[in-house]
Image (cartoon, rainbow, N blue to C red; front, top):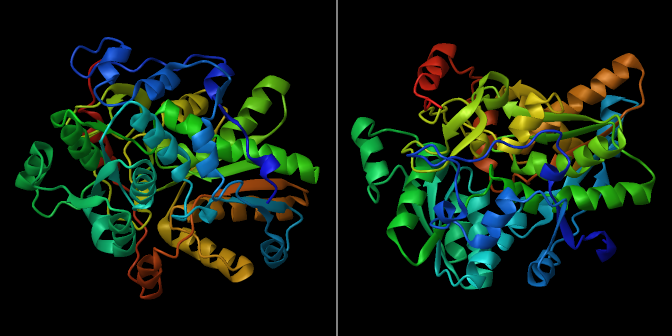
Length: 444
């Protein structure tokens, strides 16, 4: 792939939104956060990006050189899938599985590790759901000579040993969460010794570990503004690649858990729509078992179960929400990125929730047509893409669809084994339990 497609700047949607993102707030005082409040967790460069309204932010040359190991990632047309669906739609996908760890996550992991190293940080703590983010930060830590401690959601720790081994191979320490290593973990285990864990719990442990260690900072793989800014390299490349092909998407699709891969592809195109009026639709595909956009409340909430993180305004199911152990572990988060949440509130982004069995069916249909096994998370975007292509067929419309193939599934093979063994179940989270979690939201 021609390196001319690799941008030298990230895109920031905050420059083009018609309404400002509500400020993050202090978890105790509820006052708007100052940079000093955030400095305990993040390097100053990321804090500055978190509140920046600059449209473009330069990519440091060292980060760009590392991106060059796998970027630009391929933009491919799924012609065989189009033929299998007998659709007039043209389906394109951005293949983020081309990264060394097989997902989009290194786009921000490398940037965050770089900024922490520049600030003299010796250790990073983090959480991971399916293990994609943990693998990416472990790799970035190895590149930047920073040690990495990962708290991995226990359900995924047990279901996805391959990703755990990848993290350990890069030199990271991996702990199943909830654990006995932190007060937050011990409290959860005391209440529920068999807890499958959640991203909210794992975040609480990672944040606590960072706060206790003066040599450490915390690193987050999704949700926050600076993370989505780093991920915009996906969409910036795709804009250039599609322009080279002389096509432009009518629909842009990504799976959505915390919002990083959806925003990474969609936001540069959404910026084009906001500036030029292009008629592009945007679809965020989330799991029915953890439906923050489709059934959550748009309000301030904590990012973790222990209420240590800043309060951010987002679509949330409540910080105490613990989703079932579905196989799309990277989508098991109670909240959605503030930028994605606001775009949804403004009617700029459509949200759809899917059960896991039809998503696995879509993933296998894609694999049998195109030859790549998708991650369970990515299968949600593929389900939405197939539905869009079939609707185009029904209406006799030519429709250009672009989706983010956020990661391959070669490390998730046990999830497919469960599917073939008939062990998967569709799960709709009971509204009563959602309501119970929402009753514990902070009063702001």
